Length: 185
Image 1 (cartoon, rainbow, N blue to C red):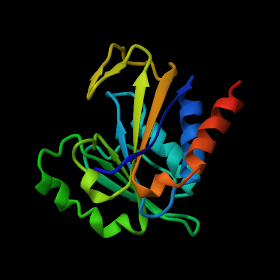
Image 2: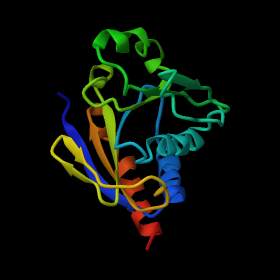
Image 3: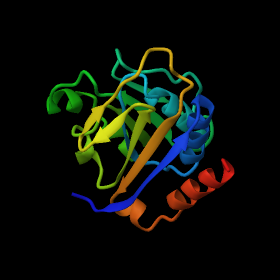
Image 4: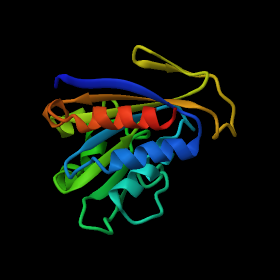
C-alpha cells in the first residue's frame, strides 16, 4: 500500500465554492493522475468533477456517468483528457476490467466516483476525495449521513488524502489548500 503523503480537509459553503476549489485542483493535475471520489448520494461528486473539468480545460458537459459507467471528456487545450467513471454498480473486478481504464491512464486524468476499494490497483499514486454534507460523518470506512433532497447549497467538507510517490514530493497540493482557506477569510 502506498504511503500517505497528505491528509487535509477544507470547508466549502456552496456549489460554487466546491467547483472553485475543484477547478484550482484541476489546474494541478496531470496525465496519469487517479482521483477516487467518495460521498453519499447528492454529496457533490459530479459537481466536484465539473470543477476539475474546468481546471483541466476539457470539453464542457460533464454529467454523471451512472448509466454509461464511463465518459471521456477530451481536452480543448494541450492537456490531458478527463475520464469520468461511476463504479457504483460495478460488482466485480472483471466488470472494472471491462472498462479498460489502464488503456487511458497514462494520457488522462481518471476520476472514479464510488471507486474506493475498487480501483486503487490502477496506480501507485492516488488522491482520495471525500465529500461530506452537513449532518454527515465519516466513521472509519463507513459514511453516516442525515440529509434531505434539495440541499445542494448547504456547506460541505472536502477531505483529501494523497497517496504515493506522485504526491510525496509535491508541495503544490498543500499550497493549494492553504491558499484556498486563506482566500475564504
